[in-house]
Amino acid sequence: MVSKKSRPIKKVKRSKTKKTAHKTKQKVKVENPVMWKFLSLILGLLVIVSIYTNGFKFSTLDNVEVSLNQLLTRDISEEAKNSIKEALSYLAEAKTLIQKSTRYSGEKVKLDFYVMSQCPYGTQVEDAIKPVLDKLGDSVEFSLNFISTDLGDSNFQSLHGESETKGNIVQLCAIKYNPDKYMNMVVCMNKDTRAIPNNWEQCAQDNDLNVDKIKTCYEGDEGKNLLSESVKKSESVNARGSPTMYLNGQLYSGGRDTLSFMRALCENLGEHPECEKLPEPAKVNLIVINDKKCKECQQYSGLTNQLKGLFQGLQVKEYDFEDEEGRNLFDDLSLQYLPVFLFDETVKEGEGYQNVQRYLEQVGEYYSLRVGASFNPLAEICDNNEDDRDNDGLIDCNDDECKDNLICREKLDNNLQLFIMSDCPYGRKAVEALKEVKENFDNLEFEIHYIASEQGDGFNSLHGQYEVDEDIIQLCVLKNNPEQWFDYVYCRSTKGVKGISWKDCAEENNIDITAVQQCFDSEEGADLLREDIKIAQSLKFSASPTWLVNNKYRFSGIDAETVKTNLCKYNKLEECDTKLSGGTNVPSGSCG
Figure 1: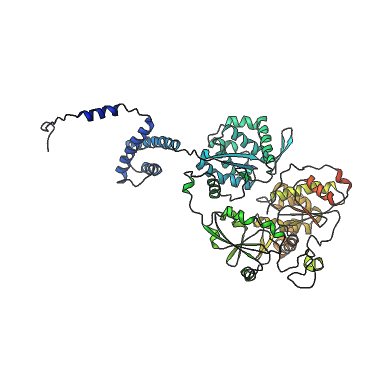
Figure 2 (figure 1 turned 90 degrees about the horizontal axis):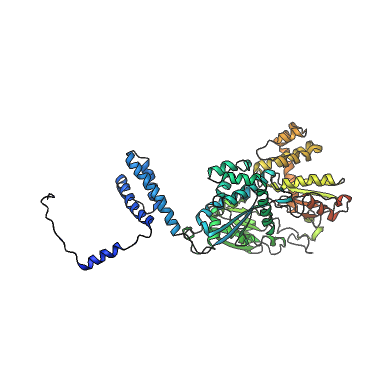
C-alpha cells in the first residue's frame, strides 16, 4: 500500500483540444435546475435503497416511492429516516415535473352528464367516471348538469324531493369555485346519498375545497341561479332521465363502469398514453333468436349494438325462429318469448358484466338477458288476419289467446290503471300523481298492478326481494283493508320503502297489521302477487310506471297533468278543464 507521502505525483499536460472542450462545457447554461435536482435525487435514492435492500429491483418512480415508504417502517436510524423523507419530498417534485413535461396535447373529447344528485343511477356513473377523469385529465372537457323542474321564483321540483334540489345546488357551487376538485366532493357525498345535502361540508373539508365560498353560494341566490342555468342546459338536450350522457354531442348508451367509460373516451383520443395501457377486451359470446313475423320485436333492433358498447369483445350469432338452429335452441331451452339474448359463461369475464348481472337469468347452460320480451312465436298474432302457427282455425281476436291483447280488450270508460314496481322512484312519483288525479275526478275507477316475474319458488323484481315483499304487502292490504289501501300505498310512495318498516304506514292508516302479516307469511300473499303480475305480462308491460286508460290505451308519465291529459283524451269529463300540477317540463323516466 502506498501512503500519501510516498505516492508519486504525475503531472499531465492538457491538450489544447481538451482545454477548449472544457471551456465549452463551462458555458452551458442549466435551463432546468429542477431536472438536475431530479437526476441527483435518483442517484441518491438508488444508493439509499441499495444499502437497505441489498440491491434495487424497480424500474419506475412509483416503485421507488413504494420501496422508500417500506423502508420507513423498518428499524433504521432517525438520520436515515430523515434522509428518506427528504428524498420522498424531492421525488414528489420530480414526478410533478415529469407529468407536466409529458402532458397529453393531442385530441380532446367532450363528455356531458345530466343527473340528479340523489339518483342511484346518476351517482353510479359519477363514481365510475371519476377515475377516468383523473387519468385523462385535460384531454376530457367534462361537464356536470342537473335535471329538475324550474318553477320560477327560485323554486324547483326534483324527483327525489327538496334534499335533492339542495344537493344539486351545493354541487353546482362546488363546480364554480373548485373546478379542479369538485368531483372529489361529489364522489364523497355519493357514499351516503340519503345524507345529501347535509354531508357536503364535511366532504368539502376532507377534500380541501373552499368551504366558505361554496357555503355563501349555496345559501344565497347565486346557487339557485346556477341551478336554473343548469336546468336550462338539461332541457336543451331533452335530458329527462338520470343519467343522460353525451359523448362528443352524441347520446352515450355504452357501459357505465370505469373501464367502459375509459374505452369509449379512448376511441376519440388517438394515442393518449393512458389509452395505450388498456387491456384487450375479453371475448363474450352472445346468441340472439328473433322472429321475422314479430312486428313489435323491432323495438329491440338496437339492443345488440348497445351490448357491443358494454362488451367490446362481443361475438354475436343471430338466428331466426324458423332457422333450424334457432328453433332447436328455443325448444331445447323451453323458451317462451322472443326475442331472446343468450350469453354463455364468457359473460362473467366481460367488462360490462356488472352492468347486466342483475338482469340475467340462468336458462340451461346460458344466461338470458331480461328485456321484457313477450312475443310468443307459437301463439296467434292478433292483428294480421291469419291463422298463425297454432293452426287452430281461429283468426286474430276470435282466438282466445288474443283476449288480453290491447287490440282485443274490452273498453271500460273512465278507467285508469297504473303498473309499477313498488320501489321504483318513477313509479312512486306516479302514485303521487294518481292521488291528485283521483281527487280531481269524482267517478274515476282506478287500479294499481305490479311488474315482476315468477322465478323458481319465488319472484324476481328489479330492485330486489324487498320490493317483491312490498308488492305482496300492498296486495294483502288491498284484500284486508280496501278502504285504506290507497292511503297506505301513497304513504309508502312518499316516505320510501327500502329500510323503512311497512308497519309505520300501516299504523298511520289504521291497517289491520295482524291480518296483513298473516296474509304475507302464508301462501295467500304469494298467490295474490302471482295472479296480479299476469296482467302486466299479458299486456307486455315491463316499464314502471306504465298507464292504461279505458283498458285499451297505453301511455307513460309521472305527473298529474300528463295523466289527466291522457285520461281526457279518451273520456269526456267536466273535470278535464282543471289544471293539475306538472306538465311538459317535468322530468320523466322509468324502471325496467
